[in-house]
Length: 203
Image (tube, rainbow, N blue to C red; front, top):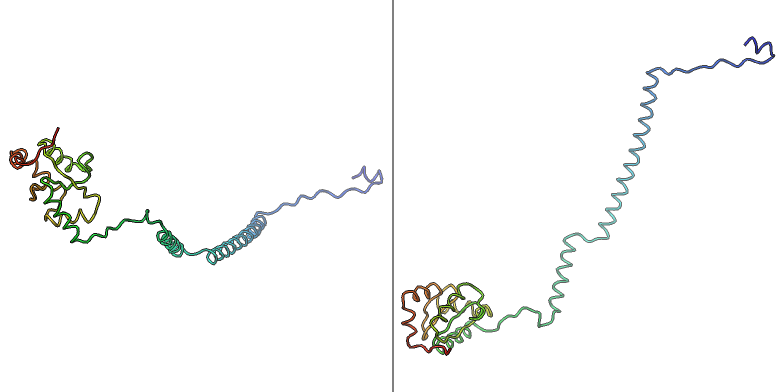
């Protein structure tokens, strides 16, 4: 400063270092935190408001889940009603009496007749396959009916014989039994005796 006076210069004021007390720092930090919290709360409130408005607009423009299900169901029904006849489920028109008459005619016409699942060359269950192989072993001529081709026939033959399972063997107009009975009779020799007067298949 003395040199500054001698040189005719005005001395600069001394530097002042402001020291903030701990309590003042805590007060400033709390104020800053309140400002940040208030800003975040405002943003969150705005976000919730926007989300609520978005959901309300979706609810007003989109159908509810049950409504969509009902609409899809109506569309399927409309498609089914417009489907070509070739692709619609087949419903047999035969009455129970017609089925019974057809069974009676088959049983009386064929000396050996088996009601089975599939055909002798392509049986569609193990029991039907075993029954056909027994008949083949005895070499008899026999006719067959595929019960899988008609629900009315499948139910009708069970009612006709009062026997709940398939296959069913008929010999000379009489019901013999299923594959288990056929196997038992084959092993005992009864089946060979039953087929004594039945025409044999030409080899």
